[in-house]
Image 1 (cartoon, rainbow, N blue to C red):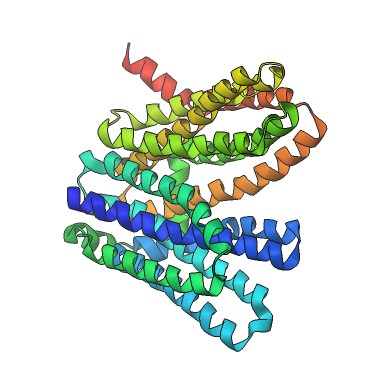
Image 2 (image 1 turned 90 degrees about the vertical axis):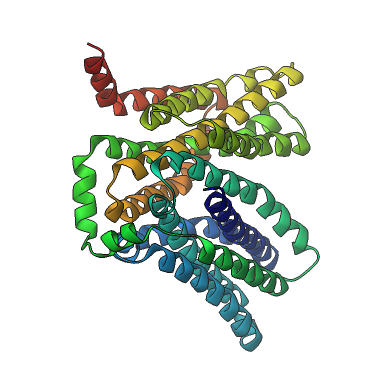
Length: 403
């Protein structure tokens, strides 16, 4: 178990560090070459579009094929994308931005295949009692990659060219591929899954018949939308309302990732007994945190108090996110039939990623027109009420069980 856990955590970290650092460095290149914030912003849309386009095909790709092979193919696809970028850039350097766009698309395709397949592979790798620990380990690895990726990309941007860094990324992907090859899969489960004949229509039919799974999809949609209130609103509160420094904002922003890292470590030690309950509690907590984000902006004359409150809130935001994500992934692995897990995860990934830019756009408009305090108070109340509505069947079932 320890070896499997270590291999999954390592392959998750190495693959994600490549995606985050290259994506961040490409953003800096685009900003430098074009000077356009719009062109820079288009990079944010590529991930959700790739995920949305691939969703109908994920069941055929992931659920009906050997997961280890699919993971290796996704890494090799990323490897080929990086290598072709290097070759083409030498032959057609004038088309720099166009080929860089295609590089990001290639990396995002590989990332989507790898992420969905790895989550759906956990039941083939470890026993049910260790699902949460493995998922928490993956969340921890992703948190570390999300913290270090932009730092690494920003650091090397001033030292080497993107072309040179791509060669480094190729070496890292090769290392991650080696770790994937060492992961051992349950042969009986692989054969049982490959013998199925699932379609996207069957996945949608299953999803429609499962109230709890539908509630998780809705939660994934709306939590990513409402999370934009914090990502867009935090700099506005810190810099515009409280008139604090950029360094203070960077520190507060980093607390979310640090909390996700610590939360992931905690979940590898403490196993939840009721994953669905943990998801709902985390979302209620998230709604409360969102509501409380409206308070620091009111403490303009008490900067120290505002900063301490923001530290608690940004940390709480990170903890609620990692608890919800880990518990949601574990619940699906336990409840959803193995042969359609890839399809379910692809749907959740697609709607989650799609609602990030929609939330950024929506809250960007709202923060230009309304008070930050009112927006946070209203968003928090809506998030809590929405969560209660979504979990009403769960509450009813628990009430009946206790009678």
